[in-house]
Length: 93
Image 1 (spheres, rainbow, N blue to C red):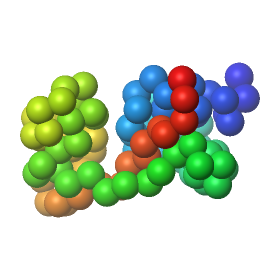
Image 2 (image 1 turned 90 degrees about the horizontal axis):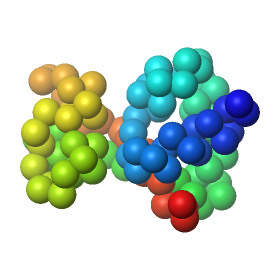
Image 3 (image 1 turned 60 degrees about the vertical axis):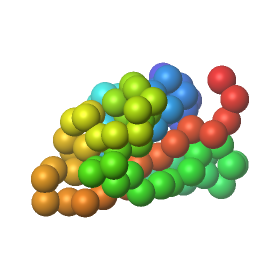
Image 4 (image 1 turned 180 degrees about the vertical axis):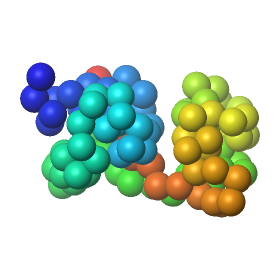
């Protein structure tokens, strides 16, 4: 599958993820995923945001509580990092 559409489809499904998470799940180089995310950002379909691991994003944990419950995005940041960059899908499904 074309990386452009593979990243799009996975981010649509997850709604929010880091470039590293997308690269790992799709078995792609992080540089390729970063380029694809930049493409979707230019098209207005993706936005970059900082997720505060102490507060959580509510979506990475698949919940709407708004509190950090140790989801995969927060775990990726680690205990010493107060935040991590993630990408959110804005486009239609």
